Amino acid sequence: MGKNYFQAIPIKESYDKKLISFTSSLGAAIGKGETIPFADNDLTYTLDLQHERIKEKNIDFDYQVYKRTQESRIGNTFYDVEDWADEHYSSTVGFASLGVRRQVRKNGSVLYRDTLRHVFYGIVTDVSGEHPDTEIHICPNCGADSTIEELQNGCPYCGTQYKMDDLFPKITSYYFFDQLRITKRQLLIGWPVCSLICALIGLVILPFLKDVPRLSEMINRFIMNDIRTAIIYGIVAALGYGFFLFLFAHLLLKIVQAVIDLDRMGTAASRERFELRMKKITPEFSYEYFKCKAISLIKTAVYSKDESELLCYIGGPLPAEFKDIIDLNYAGTFGLKGFSEEEGMVAVETRSYFDVLSIRDDKVSYTHPVISATFRRRTDIPVNMSFSMTRVQCPSCGASFNPVKNKFCPSCGNEYELITDDWVLAELKMI
Image 1 (cartoon, rainbow, N blue to C red):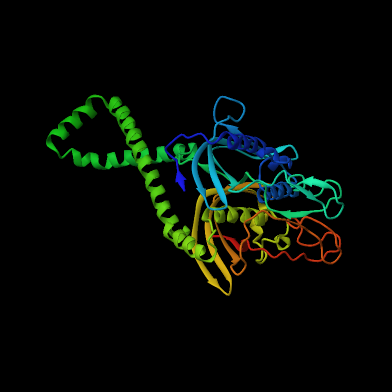
Image 2 (image 1 turned 90 degrees about the vertical axis):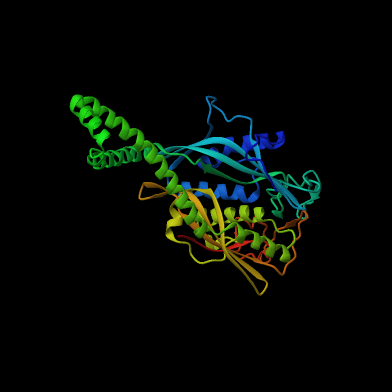
């Protein structure tokens, strides 16, 4: 893995164009349900679920990604800040300074609006081998010839559905990470409070300074001769010292929060132990892939109308608060709290920060909770990393449908069993 956080290295041109197209279309995908380009199947499905949630709430959600310059459109420069690769995939993290404008409306009335200054991270993943996009495949139902790329959404002639791997390169994950900065609200409240504290401290220690011979004479002469100037200088001093006290307090709170996060999230050492242990089970294991998959599964479960119908979820009913979420953004902190292995199954507990926009009773709230998630995966099935595509057919009635979006056959209602060697979500809660 390579990290280039302190070097402005432009991302490769083909990835740059994909990220520009993706970020430019993100708002329309979330707010209007339009198709988003270059996203993998999991990400596309998650965005579809988010839009369905917005429709269920009977609201209009205006979501705009903008470039933080004078230009009106998103620019053409993303930077390569991190890379990783294994024997099957290579991934690149593209970085750009983008902002997000959000507005929630209902029946013409604005319920909520904000403008967020963010840094955007988009992960572009490619395969190490050959791309099968243009290979010809014969539909087993109607016999028509089509390219594999054309069959991604089903046979264009008869509608037969296929379960197939993504055709890369694809954008497999994205998130907006808020910059470590002081907000206007914090400044407007914190600075005056700290200035008042400094002024009170000055008034408390002033009598003690009068006992110092030279200072006593200067203070008495200064106050008695020009009380107006003394007040002005006192206010300026209080504001100046108050500002530095505010900065110090803000930094101290961030440090305390970071220490708390280490305990809540887990340490880097736990990640290393987890990765080492997983590689003994499945040598192709990638922690970065697991992290992207985990975030994707969390979003899928949160946005789903009925999580029990998801193939990727095996837990109980989710808390009602999850059903009020209309925008869920991974906030850049992901930690491991524990993992175990028994009877051919590995279980991993994670905790991560999310920025959450929710609506209940026409009231919108913006919170930053920690979400705890437990994932499971079978370890007794070898992983096949080569490209594959198989026809999906209900064993009961023979109908073909998309199993990602339907756990039950839409024709006969029978459950479709899909054996997978990938991660599934077993528990999800806010803490």
